[in-house]
Image 1 (tube, rainbow, N blue to C red):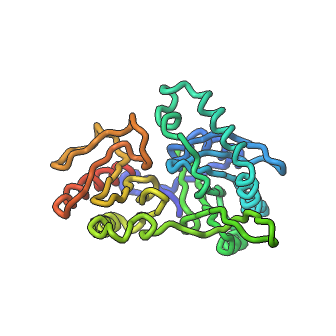
Image 2: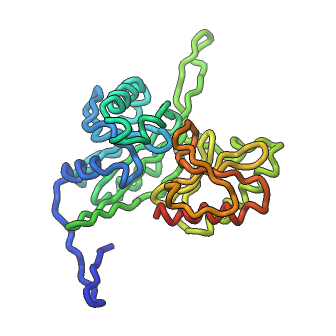
Image 3: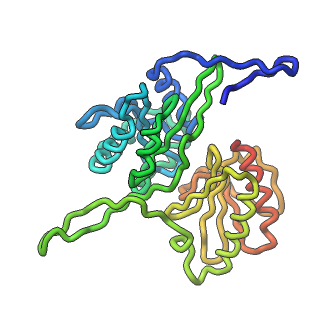
Length: 312
């Protein structure tokens, strides 16, 4: 879809900028957190069979592989899938690169968030992202049959505008380790793809009141925007459009709701909010509040709407 600049109510088409893919890689790496919400760790990360273009860690503490497609004939999806398999067998190399990066930043001036909050890496939900100007029908067909999701992102670069949009629907990716009997005396670990957390994993059967609160909040969140994505992790449920704006942590009696809006930007209502940016916590948002009864839902939605509007 072309972009237009309005001059005296007349639409003037903005021409695309001709760049090489390497320039796009540098541009994305330098602005990775602003564009994709991913903390950049390293470029040209070495493996036994080539180099991963970029590696990072997202707000959920999950490792991210990013590959850039440089031509229509590039087998970038096959390559990215191989890199994922390699990285899962060499987790210590990623964690070493992460530590090197954390030790190199001037904390807290450079990035006050990442050094304090990345206390572990969530290897159960790694991400693979491909970025290209376009994808052919073979690329789009291949990703449908992979046992995990590769996020295909399309970019358009204009004079002073960068547009990035999703080419395929993002789904949850779960990678877990199980054991399979090889012979009578030996067990070999294998990888299973596709397992996802669900409501049943986060809410115990006895948490009926909390589940009811969650369902009512969920309905109101989805009413905000038809493009909102809900994602279940081991400890919480997150909601995002381009960026995460809300997370819900289920409790036996009530819910903790985290928001990714600066505390100075939020307009307070009758529900008390807390700043937890200086404390360890599972979710990404530094503002949290508690919902324990139906009467709190109106105030809860007010806070969630504020965080949503701030994120888009």
